[in-house]
Amino acid sequence: MMSIKEQLGDELIEARQRLADSEALVDRLRSNILALFRRGAAVGKQCKYCQAPIYYFIHRDSQKTGVYDPDGTSHWNTCPRAEEARKAIAAARKP
Ligand SMILES: [Zn+2]
Image (cartoon, rainbow, N blue to C red; front, side, top):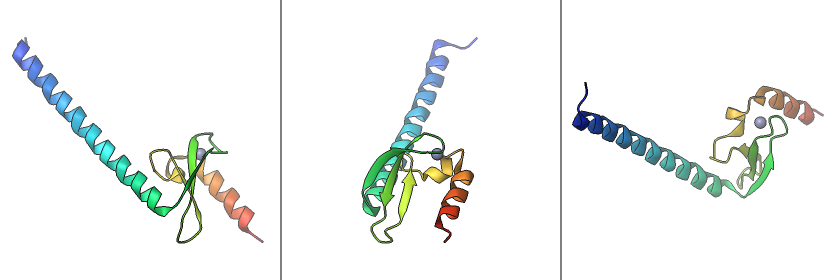
């Protein structure tokens, strides 16, 4: 049977790991958000394919629109219906 000292030691190791994971997540989010703010201004909407909350950014340099999740990840990397959306967007661009 595990002693209280051993048990507390294991819990401390787990707590430290969770803290490290959380710090890494915050760093990643901060970096993503800063990158987005550098690219342009955001408009919050809902994905018309999966209804997830998304942000449209107009990229200052290219004037193209990017679609992102609230954590700054490109929505087309996480949308479960991304392929359908890509096809619809491509079809709409055809003359
Ligand atoms: Zn979506």
